[in-house]
Length: 73
Image (cartoon, rainbow, N blue to C red; front, side, top):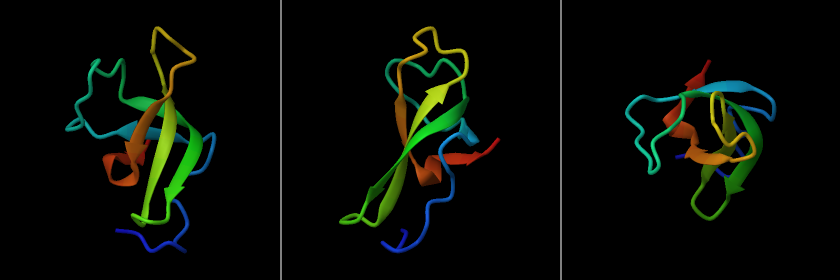
């Protein structure tokens, strides 16, 4: 877990990869995306990210993932 003062690993506009072990409903349209928003949860000491995924047929849709579910692309 992250401490509440630890910076997020990724920044808005950065390209990231979702781990293949992550499953969602509906299924992911792709595993590479762009960070749209960094979401810090101070009570849980975690960081999450809203992503726009490459190849998504709904380009305005955002997907939420925790930091441990992502890696640099």
